[in-house]
Length: 466
Image 1 (cartoon, rainbow, N blue to C red):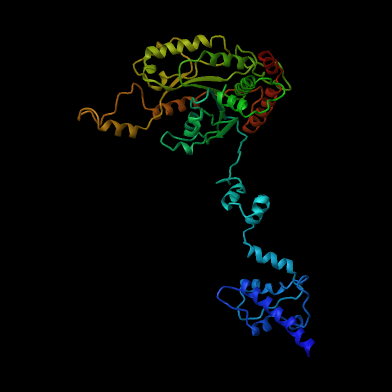
Image 2 (image 1 turned 135 degrees about the horizontal axis):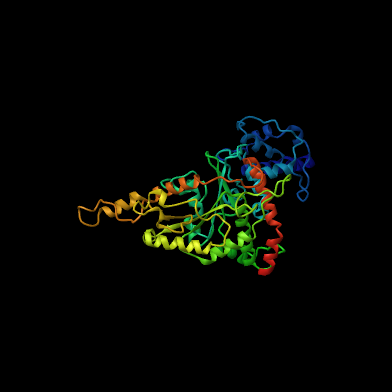
């Protein structure tokens, strides 16, 4: 009796106290599971008949913790769950510490990617989701739809940084001045990029209109922001270039020489008149332009002009952001004479294909007023006519308060429309000795760009610069 009396409390009393403490810790709030009758209901009978181990080597009594998981999954507190006796105790402890795992798999990926910070629970879920965001999905599908017709017109543009190349190309192709600039087909510079003197366009972008006009927008030539990016970000240069400014100049020459070979019309945009270095750059690009590939069956063909078998595009000088005094007929005549003298030795078609006098902009001027008329067009600052009228409404005498102010030139939208009509009316001469369709032009342009990159003349010129 004395042995059974001593062993009875040691076998059941101590185990009951352990189960009561665990049930109080792990049970749901507001529910007491420490009663003796509840212990008998929840603990299987075959487990109660086993003798308990000493306190120093106490076995794992955590298997009934699986009851908590059953209640979280929707079981009623009063029902006895079906718990398999072979459940792992270590897995139960892990479930108890982590709680119910979320159904979104992004949190599991986030915890793996954050390393030790994720295991310590110090990861901000907002930061984790931001790092795991997928690339921005497209709003609609696009196609590079090239036809087999041969009446396409290819228009390219070059210019210094910030002269308005992307804006002008958007207005010529698909947009109007009244639209929001964020919806332009060629993205213009944002205010943030302007404040840090950066460039928006990179490389060459193209857009095809319904009139089968291919517009090529390019990055700025001789760009200081590209040079600054190369120097400050420690970007490695190609092995054939030693200095960053040499690489920037050669990259600009490659793009310009490429446009001189694959375009019908090349627009040179400048926002002040004039930069002598720009004309030197054009002459250098013309000198380094790759020769026109000859036909495989006839290598002695001639295009019928005094320039032999070489192809040269029409070049148009666009004076963007022109001031009022530049629209004066006297100043306009001086500008034409200056461009004519600077381009006198060029084979580029810089005169005879575009005229401001044909646009009824200067109705009082005769046709022979401009003796040396070059392909020069003037565009004023882009403004909003409605905002200007509201600004002038409260100023001046009452009789003239609502009248438009004197500009000295037509509105920006009307001049853009006239310039677009002049560009679309350009002659679509043959680019090579064979007739090119749109599809053939694309492959032809790819071969020309590959030839420009491997040109020996450009390589030799780069060596002389360095």
